[in-house]
Image: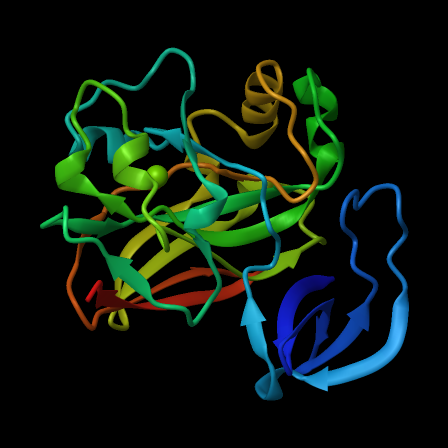
Length: 258
Ligand code: MG
């Protein structure tokens, strides 16, 4: 099932996408595991509405250096434990919305990643049961002001500008093995990143165990699982797409702040 949030005549609605038609569902907030999803009886053509980010995370937790190929291109050793940082909820945008380059940065980069969407309140779960807490998966772009990211030190500033967390276009609920996917990134239509999620250094289940050992994850929270090699610069007017087979294509265009 492909879950979407969308805007219809200024009203935010929730639904499932089926062959170009959105079947409206009840809003699953606040806890997708407690309230069963049901159809409201309304349907919408996807081309007639505006898709939004498919969930509204209270927080986005990101993995740094989770692909060997990316650690090598950044001249970093692979970490012994997951490196995590946060992106604020205010950085989240949906497909088709502009990525806005802030004046503080001369170098804004794309990072194509798999996003894990939490479906239940998650605290101190073991890896063996961690995937039971996932509602589904989405495409993500961990947009980064690279010149504001020191090699040693905090990364959150570089990662947290408004619009720096495109998510979407859907949450696919039918993926059983998140390590069986291919993440691709396209800059203006040209393939620039491609890697199997099997290359994740820390697997999704282990990441959830690690993160939930520290903080409570709420329904709709998203974990970005790291980017493979091939990162690069976004220039004004560029289109960047993150594509994951079985989920879809998240595409955003770059503008500046003025
Ligand atoms: Mg990243």
